[in-house]
Image 1 (tube, one colour):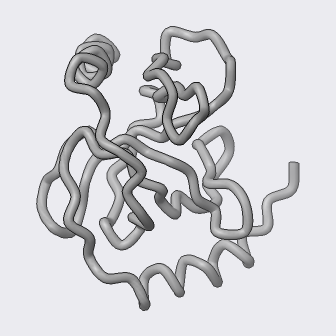
Image 2 (image 1 turned 90 degrees about the horizontal axis):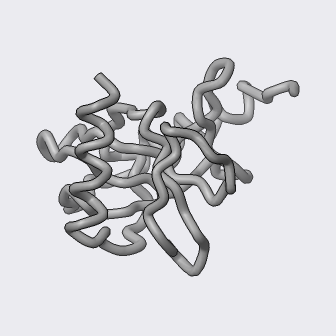
Amino acid sequence: MNKDYDEWNKMKKIVNKNRTRKLYHKRDIWWCNLGLNVGYEQDGTGKDYDRPALILKDFNQYVCLVIPLTSSSKISKYYIDIGCIGGKKSKAIISQIKLIDTKRLINKVEMLDKEVFNKIRKAVRNLI
């Protein structure tokens, strides 16, 4: 598949220039401009290169650790079922953990249930 990095670069400049910092917390699920990435790294989708992501760790107002989400039905130890998010069955792709600048946060979808979040954290700890 050919990726149009020039188009993503245009969007990335807009994200960097125009975004204000958002108030966010761990367990939040946000739509994020994850962009167009290299190889098998999880991309955002659509014209805004966005996808939902779970905030795993809130470091400060500038950066946070996220796990991209997918509605894929793929079965893997790295795809953890988290229930329905925004009306779609969703999975956290724990192998795709990523540090992002909070300027990438677009809008909050919801907050993940504590039990499910703890299941994700345990799976991440076991990953390492």
